[in-house]
Image (cartoon, rainbow, N blue to C red):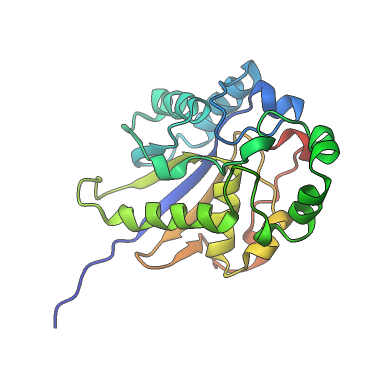
Length: 222
């Protein structure tokens, strides 16, 4: 009997370094912001922490803050960079550029929905978590692409929403649990893709494996 081969991939999901909008507590989404001085420092520090890894490639969101982060990693880790459009941040639509206080004033009902039932939220002129999750699944399915190097781990430079969604998938949790997770800028999360299933590295399914890195909630948007 023959069947398709589904390779196992070690994935290091990395949130880009901080930006001025992160530090001001503004929703970023698709806004093409650049790294701040703090964000550049975060990525150089993370590169040092990951120096022991044997990476075969760095896959990155096309947004500038992610591409800059990938370049800083590549400068230390020596892996080639490939842009993956599916890794783009959640589209916050009309919220992009606004602070939490401004959203509360302009979109109180939408904000209440986002805080209590995120799985039902459709951002005005933006997207839903389900749509972003679909993009993430498309990205994961593409990891079987024969053009990717076959040996070594993959660094995946992306955004908070995409990492939260990946961790929910890896632990079998529903989108309703989205807001229970926090992922700080310039940090990494280790997952394993088995060709049809995503798992946290290690024992794989417990809440203790989820990223709960201390961060200012107001400064960790986008």
